[in-house]
Length: 270
Length: 270
DNA sequence: TTCAGCTGTGAAAATCCTGTGAACGCAGGG
DNA sequence: CCCTGCGTTCACAGGATTTTCACAGCTGAA
Image (cartoon, rainbow over all chains, first blue to last red; front, side, top):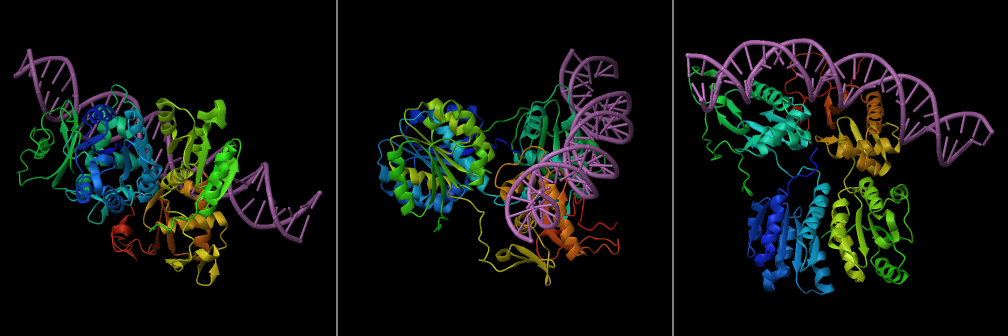
């Protein structure tokens, strides 16, 4: 299951003090966040694949209402929370009727802001049946969340639930090295016992099934002493000289996921 | 744009003045409303088939938190708005984290309360009253929402209400894998208790009736560890030739190719 | 090159999941 | 009051899936 899918939040606010404090907390909570100091076109918001948007009304100026209307209309699945200093009932009602999900008065406590954003995206997530997110493609692979299954061409990989969740987790973090503990924690839902090899075993199963359907491609790479990284790359015309070598060697990933440490980049524009 | 399907609201509050004013407005807006002056067991809330719940914290007393938790856990689709006089950030955060959707401080303007309730219950996709699109056909099957019944040719399947709702839900999501919890929640209207096998039992009944009227077709497929998927496909199984592509019946995408973890195909020769 | 520590493998053992038949309880109709 | 239809709950059996283990193959560093 996916208990706390991480939130991708954008904050549009000029109150640097508030933003700083909030950022500290959202980061600690593992949210992905992007801070903006002025409104940006809705199109760009779309490209960010956001989960939620926190916006200070005062930044918007006169265009406020039309801007909110455009954003809400364009991104029906985006949770929009507005905050503002003084405001009237009429303003709040107008915003909510426009499609805004919540309105908080400033000053406000960052913890409450976060709780409200969580509440808003919780509700949003429930209503959409997951169809929304198009299939994720990587190499020859097509991962379909709505089918709990991955395909190559029209052939299914026959993944079990765990195998699928593992693959999905890795693929979502394409290019990033994920540590075993982190993987286990997020797929199994609780902490990994010391010495547990389950992750390794499932990685093997995944590799087998991937290889079976999509030979000629390497998907999962081992980072010795650290964990695994998903990054589809065609097995170059390399001679069958070093068969099993492709797994660990290359420390330099094309995507720039550098050294053997997990990079917790806060916001990777996919 | 959103015809705002009428809201079924329950109000639990003892502040008769506020309730009176609010009621006047909700009534004018065409909402269905029920006013209560004390908390009632979550089961009864379930029976009311509510859309939203407005509740004054002071009515709940000591049981407040556990009550809210029970209600929110049991009715994940119910929009819950709490209002209260004085409150602390910690209280509001706690409530929101528990599953409450919004918190309003009293005194508050009825119009804003309504706007917030609307915002909270804005998106819901269920409750197609059916008639809009003609009968849904799938395989040899014809599902008539206006009659709460499914037919093969001219013969009725004699589905009970629950069976029909289950079939309709599955058929509406043709090709998609639906998890048991999601199915239960949408057909039964509240959260599935851990270990409940009702869905499985109804799936069996459905398969029996489907098989009886339309042998030679497989409709409901099991995805081990996940749930079920509706996808009508003729049982070409007469010859174990090489069932590579026969499945792509109606939909164009590789939808039909997912013979992945099909454990049961509704065709069980003794 | 050697060594201690990791990781890949295969298979056995332990669990979990689903299909099924039947008993139960409830409510409405006769 | 009894009967019948419907929904729920149980317990069991057969499989499918996960875990666990012991070993062999690698890796990186001394």
